[in-house]
View 1 (cartoon, rainbow, N blue to C red):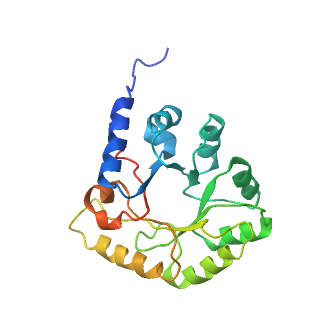
View 2: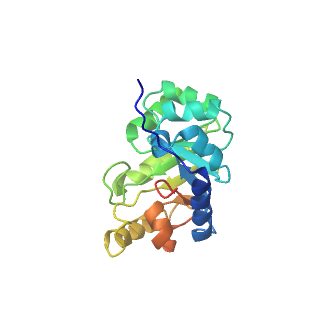
View 3: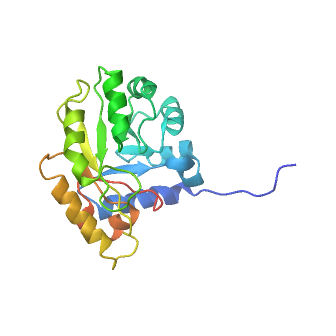
Length: 216
């Protein structure tokens, strides 16, 4: 017998939350993060409710492919990127974007030599210390990615992730913002830094793309 426990998802509330994001970050595009089955809310239904988002982000291919096959035509970003050269062919087939946060991923892209075009995000570790290139490795990584035939002008963007944005008085966010500005200065391109907390409290972190997740 199935358990008589049900979670009722108010999709109208989800739509309201997206409107709040757009109001708070009116000059930014919205990348709605729907990883982990939209935080347990049901990715397919949640994505349909978030139709006004500009793009969507998931953890990996296993989450992206069902959304594409369900009819989602907007950009889908893989926050954990690729895990093998074989994944590059899947990126092309399903028209997915990838976050590049480790040198091995650049090697796999070079090995696969995709025809493209591919849209990629280069992730910087500005202080979260989870994923991303440290300062000394950013310039070589940018150069190698920009040399790929599949990466055309305007298809390489910047990303980082805030560690303490939900604590407004924590100086870590100021430090990460300063690092992000400095490390992306030499190569102007679309940038994304603000998570849910920063969307609400740090307009100086909004940049070109904001990435609401749990606040949706």
